[in-house]
Length: 399
Ligand SMILES: Cc1cc2nc3c(=O)[nH]c(=O)nc-3n(C[C@H](O)[C@H](O)[C@H](O)COP(=O)(O)O)c2cc1C
Image 1 (cartoon, helix red, strand yellow):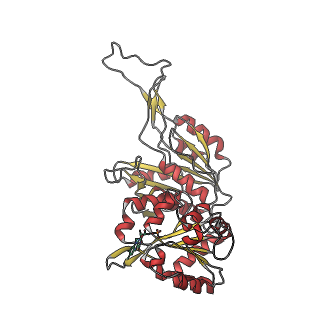
Image 2 (cartoon, helix red, strand yellow):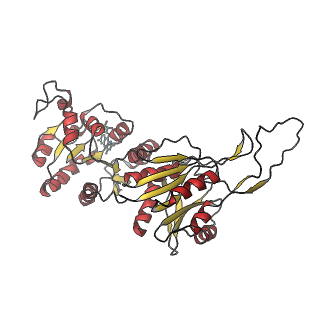
Image 3 (spheres, rainbow, N blue to C red):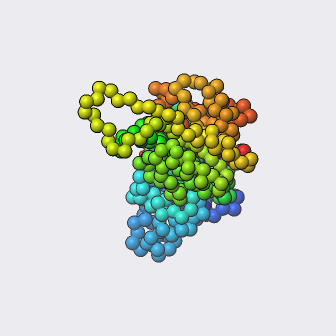
């Protein structure tokens, strides 16, 4: 087990963590950043870990590091570790990891890692809640890093807030879960996710669309694949990058999406319909571009599109889980409950669209999960990737 220690005031607490891990029988090696050595000494951590502690001197030493002649110690350590924990993880190191920087031994090892990497962000509440840190943490999670949520309480500055290193027992439990693969609780599950908007053609060049970016559905696909699921993403037009190991089918109209979902439904254990599909489409699609000349008005006759949630509800097989998303411009939970019943969903994720919760294109969302047993769980505003994991937690609890 490799522990990376960075320059945070909580570095001294890592002494107890290392003692605990060694007591459990773990072989612990430690890397310290230059800043970390200002807070505690390598001597303390090498004594407790019963191993040499690596610093940037080992990174840059042409004759090899302290315990080998190997000048590429960053690769050897990356290959050696079963799990890497960076605790405390400073805002600075988190930012470096989020953009793939590797200008010291610790970040180079993390970048070269062959094993799971966990970070325990520990800092002042302002630094933690700063948009940069929050975006960096979301990016790390999306890349597959494990983030151990900091605890709330009195901080070194005397201010009370979030940013403390969690209790040792919480960190040990998180490491155990990572090593035992408990975080991969969707292995062998097949999940079909829909995402994005749909485009309904008016003529050869124009369409009716909506403001959905696809971020919610893509976040679900990414989180599910990281938890071990086999994921097929059926998406309307979106410029988002396909998450690693996710299979993707691009569609344009609601009807195309319905056909793709229907064809692939048989293989899926879970169907999550996060796409913002059009409810109406032009009755007739003009083959050529409609000309503007001599027209004071253009009337479009719209007809309903296929209701994918409803149609899939009719085809629902007993053991399959169906999850729907509903967006309303008011707090109309009754409407969400009606959809839940009519569309035979196991649960529905209800977005209330408002100025404060403008979900379109945002990396954040505030949702309420309502299940078919009548349970209602209102979640605070959080990154879409975290919402995705909450949705998957709910699925795991039903499976
Ligand atoms: C007294 C003191 C306490 C600090 N505590 C923290 C902290 O708790 N968390 C943090 O992210 N940065 C903290 N910093 C700032 C980091 O030490 C600084 O950003 C440093 O460059 C981090 O380098 P590293 O990420 O390479 O370890 C502190 C700095 C000082 C001087």
